[in-house]
Length: 133
Image 1 (tube, rainbow, N blue to C red):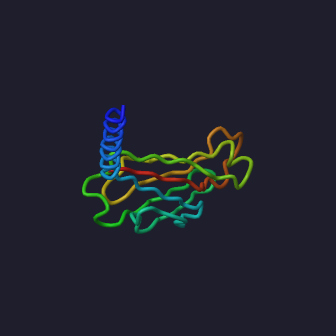
Image 2 (image 1 turned 30 degrees about the vertical axis):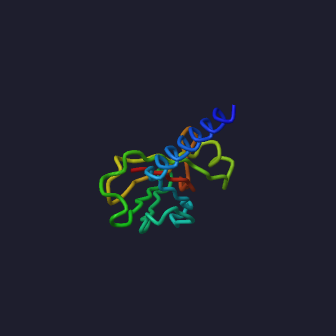
Image 3 (image 1 turned 90 degrees about the vertical axis):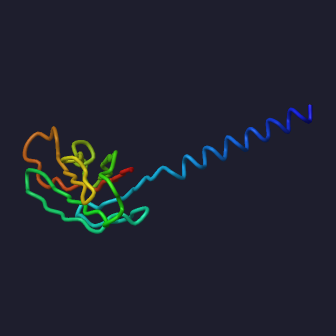
């Protein structure tokens, strides 16, 4: 019985070591960007700056400039998710989405107010951005 418990303990430790090694090779980059285009948080340091512009009653554009060397190739996967509760309309109708394929140099995001009956007004959105190698 002691041998079985020892063997199981060794197997669990080996499985844990393999999963930690696999997790260490996964590179996930996250950021939170405010609706005015300011960078609130990022992990690790991978964003150099953000160019923000907004066209009233149309869309807001965020050109996220990546730190040189953060990516050797274009990110394999990026996703954006809104987190804007500045108004009832922004909560219900506001979306942020990638606008174009991410490159080594930048990721483009647009903010929109979809489904709102009437003029959209300001389409600026606070959002989370995540990319991986």
